[in-house]
Amino acid sequence: MKHVRVRAPGRVNLIGEHTDYNDGFVLPVSIALHVRVDGSERNDRALVLRSSRFEGERRFDLDALEPGARGDWSDYVRGITYELLRAGVKIRGAELDVSGDLPVGAGLSSSAAFEIGCALALLTLAEAYMDPLELAKLAQRSDNTHTGAHCGIMDQLACTSGRRGSALLLDTRDATIEYVPLPKDTAIFACNTMLRHEHAAGAYNERRAECRRAAELLAQRFDRGGSLRDATHTELAEARERLGDVLYRRARHVVSENARVQHFIRALEAGDLEAAGALMLDSHASLRDDFAVSCSELDLMVELAMHCEGVYGARMTGGGFGGCAIALVAEEHAEEFRRRIEREYRRATGVTPDIYAIESAGCAEARAL
Ligand code: GLA
Image (cartoon, rainbow, N blue to C red):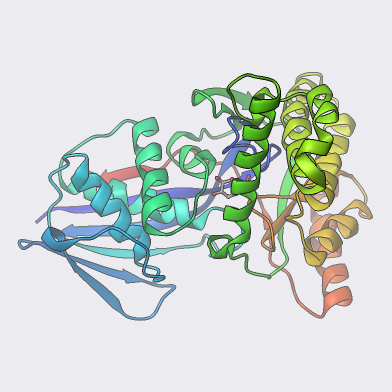
């Protein structure tokens, strides 16, 4: 009887938010908080799922899987299994036990880690291999068709391709990756507002549709193909009326955020952490004002972080509408930051936030036992 154990990391995104479905740039870091999957082979065609986070057991017949979202946590595994079978992988019956320390719904990419973790367990039990990009694309397709979240590829690729000590500069137009060393003598914190985000529920997909519409209008106006990646501030100014206020703002966020990723990389290369921090704040303001995906809890967390000593910058991370803000903090102030942000957020809201000192990690890994 074969057994497998998988660790699939979550991620924080340093900068480049809501750009991954616009052919843009993102800069995630895979983190030590992870989803763990313990899998064992069965000698029938049943897939049996248990999770330490959710009640009860789920059971599927591998020969009767159907696409589509049911609104249950098991959709992620049903989806990924369906896509693996469609890709021709000879999946066998299995028991999958899911656990780990990655919080769910905190904007740290627990869904992608869950999908990739289960996929790697099933692949390993089937003695099959899939390269990291292909696996990330398959997981994204699964999300798009089986869970109703029209997400980009950032979370899945950070999970399959992360590298300890580095952020991953991903150009989502062609899925090329460059590894960027994390800044020295700094700590990264993820500060959980404890407000669970629900981006499958609509606002995320709505932003995605708005971006598509803005890109179409710009392409028509300037007689070219392309996505918001190809737009410029000059074009936006010229097409402002045609776009209308909402689409203009959505597009302005994407254009400015792509530029910020490039500036952020240059600031890291130059060791200019003040400049990097200022770009994080600009990113947050743009997500709040132009893209409208922040919320008062995230804004408060960022504001409180900026009042702590040794903080270069802070911003929401992930899809938004709750979840975590990240802060880039000088190492010698790290402990004091953790105590202070926890106290101040509790004082302001009555809610005790979880504060995670982020440790970078490598990519998802499976070990046959
Ligand atoms: C979620 C999605 C990603 C990305 C971010 C926002 O995490 O899964 O694809 O769009 O939101 O940057």
